[in-house]
Image 1 (tube, rainbow, N blue to C red):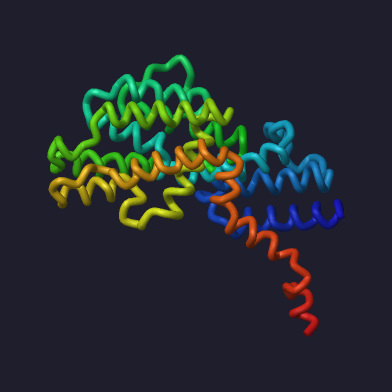
Image 2 (cartoon, helix red, strand yellow):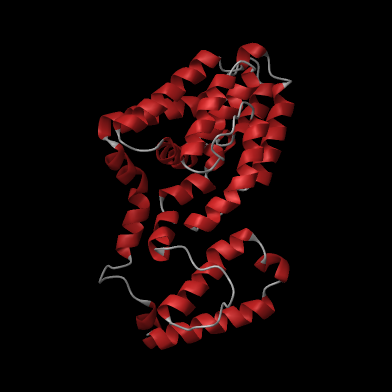
Length: 284
């Protein structure tokens, strides 16, 4: 098994060096997801020495970190634009009076290592600058894809453009945002989870349950700019409140199981004796 792994990993690596464009191989996403996994298979499973001379070693407990990185933390990264952390920070910045709320949200990101500690963040632009400088380092450490900060910047640009067309009465009040943030933090503390873990679960639920046109804040802003009397991101904020109430009533793990049930059931069906395997289909 080790021999086959070493040969397969080495062959894939050598083919990749020739077939995959160098620009793609130099990206942090490729190095995080592909190159580091191949290195683990070649060095630690296949026990091949000298294939990566002079390079830094893999993170300690690589396989554990890889498994953790592919869990809820990964969902939180990929669905970050539907996360209340992103949405509330953006809305607080638009309100012009929510700098204290942005500081608290930034602190939750600092606690998870997504922003540099001992740095003060009071605007969305500052948070984006901070994410840009640290997201790659975090990706290397826990083996998750880095945040697409470029897409977040474009999203923020669209939101600010649309915000100028939205009547002030259609913007969420800072009291509403502050109340929802307190509710999110209280729920995280009660369930003994980090704010980002709860936010990731809310983001997953929002992506699954809300219509496509209200998933992302930029689309909400465009809709609010065209429709008079429509509160910006009202459905999104309402969904967060409903989900937090369900988490408090059911418990974090029970809510997690409910949201992941379709995926868990699909995974379990792969082991059903009634399901024909690929080998069986080939033999037939």
